[in-house]
Amino acid sequence: MASTAVMAAVRARVDALWSRTPVRYPNEADPDDGLQVPADKEPFLALQYPIADEEQITVGAPGDNVFREEGVIRFVLQIPRGAGTEEYSGWLDELRAAFRGKQFGGVTTYAASPATLDDRNDDGSYWALSCAVPYKFDLFG
Image 1 (tube, rainbow, N blue to C red):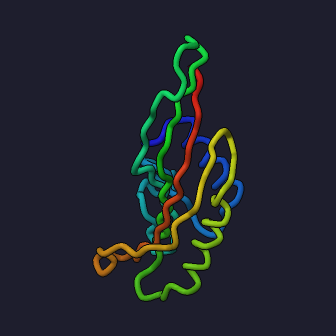
Image 2 (image 1 turned 180 degrees about the vertical axis):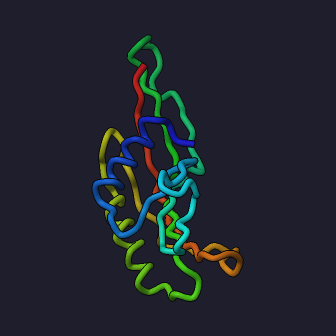
Image 3 (image 1 turned 135 degrees about the vertical axis):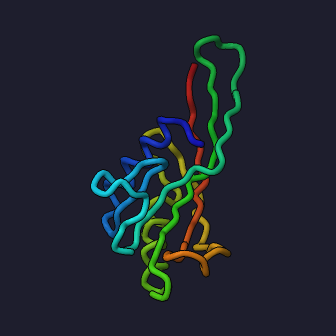
């Protein structure tokens, strides 16, 4: 999982730029209903951080060394089954553009993957469209 600083920077950017659906951040329930998914089956966006790693990239300056965290931000747009994908894939494209090749809160992002489908889409009430955005974040210490 990403560091606290990375998740805070991503959250601030999503909160500022995304208004199409409610957002579910890792391990947070909706304060209104206590559930992870909307009861009305409306679309929602979930954020995940499936990969993160850190390495030391400078040596020899105690207290001033640079450590680099690299990982992936995964955006999962959950849409109602049977609703088609054209409109929603456009929404995901907007999100990809908002995070592609950007710098914010010390985070640098790179190329955003095109939308991918989840092989389990035939199960459950929702259909998942997702994209992944690699990032780096430098820490000093």
